[in-house]
Structure formats: C-alpha cells, structure tokens
Length: 313
Ligand code: BDR
Ligand code: CA
Image (cartoon, rainbow, N blue to C red):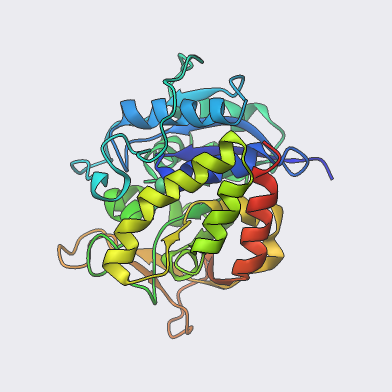
C-alpha cells in the first residue's frame, strides 16, 4: 500500500511535536503533504515557529509549513501556557528554525491540496482547535467530498473536561469550528481525552525515549519532563498523556485502538458547558452517527511503536 497522504493541522505543543515526529519517522505509512499551524496552545506566530523547529529536529527542513488562522471563528483566543510553557515547547533547548514559512495561508493550502489531489486520498489530522479546517470547509464546501478522513484529537465524554468541567481544550477554544467539522458529513475519527488519558508516559516509558540517545528521543523525553508536571498535579496521574500522537499512531496501527461509531455534537451556546462534546455512546437518541469516538488503546503497543519510530530519526 502506498503511504497515506496527510495534512497535519497543529498548535505545537509538546504532544503535537511528538505526533509530528512520529509521522515524519514513518514514511512507509505516512506522507506528510504539509503542516498547517493554527492558534491554540500558544499564539499563531509561536505555533508556526514551533512546527518548523520540530521539522528540523526530525531532519526534515523540506516539509512545507503554513501559518493559518490566528484566532477562533467567533471568540477570543484562549491559550494554554499553563500546560505547555511560554514558548509552547518548553523543556528541551532547541534552535530557532532556519527553514522558511510558506507564503500561502494554511487554509488556501488545505483547499488547493484537496482540489488538486485525487478524491478520497488525503486525510486531515487536526491536533489543535479546528479553526483552519472549518474555515476551509466553509470557504470551499466542495472539498468535503474529497477528504478521505479526518482523524482529530479533541473532545471528551467519560473524562469530561480539562479546560472547563465539561470541555476539552481543542474543542473549547473554537466550538463553532468543531461544530462545523462534526456536521461536515466527512468520515471522522475522534481521539478524545477518554483514550488519550490512557496514553501515559510513565517513567520507564520516558526513560526509553531518553535511552534512544538521538536528538528526537532526548527531546521527546525532555518535553515530557516539562509537560507532565501539569497532569501529575491535576490528576495525580503517573505521567503526561500523549494526546496528539494518538492521531498519527492511529494512521499507522489503527488496530491498537477501539471505539464506537456514534453521534457526536458540540455545545456552542451554553456558557456553562460551552465546547462540550456530547457523544451518544450508549445510543440513547436517534441522532445519526457521524464519528468514530475512540475509547481505548493498547498503551504498551502504542509506546513500543512510538519508541521504535523515534529511534529511526
Ligand atoms: C489538547 O490540547 C492541547 O493542550 C494538546 O496539545 C492537545 O491537543 C489536549 O486537550
Ligand atoms: Ca495540540
């Protein structure tokens, strides 16, 4: 099988960085057509910079990186420096990128790529707020039919919220964009907190990253060292959850994940539950299924894959 063509839409973020490293380390399975940055964990100028830092860390300065939307569709931007640090990539000391940022806007790149590639051959992998994706779908509704799949990190049902009591960060930042994506009729796979909170970097797993001894392995370990303090304090968990790498791991080994195809809708009006993903996990409504909501993974297989691939960089 030829590698699956993807666009990674991202707001790096340490866990976004590991997701990108995993994709770039897996050319037999994944061809990264481009990386589009969006405002989220930190403002856009930093996410566009961080995406290029990560490409250079992977030895891939040839990857095309585009800057996209600098704010949500109809809300003020909420950022997450309290989790990711001031730069978004706090932890390792990494050089400023020298590779260029592309001139085109990320939304333009997404639309043009989907129009130019054969239908059903390009998968979108959003790892941050869905502003770029929703803007592309709104501006060019014809692209919906051409998308092979959207595999995204966002939302939560049983785990409820990490930024409010009911909302996960990526969806909360731009609920309107998430609503547009959920209603797009595209084949959607969602990695919510329900599964990503099971992808925990325990100490032995982080030691394995560090023991690789290459720049990518050591950086992944140092990013996790920084990122884990938030979850350890908040949830008392054993380490940092690697949210976004669940998306790229799914493209390589979907069989290690399990979930249900159900109806998922996004709350866009209530101040109390804004950005909540209401997943009909138990099938108690007659609302039509629109997404595969992942609930579990084989965490050991996930970390074996990740460690082996980081070692290739
Ligand atoms: C998501 O929010 C960000 O902080 C992470 O990068 C991840 O995409 C988890 O809620
Ligand atoms: Ca992210």
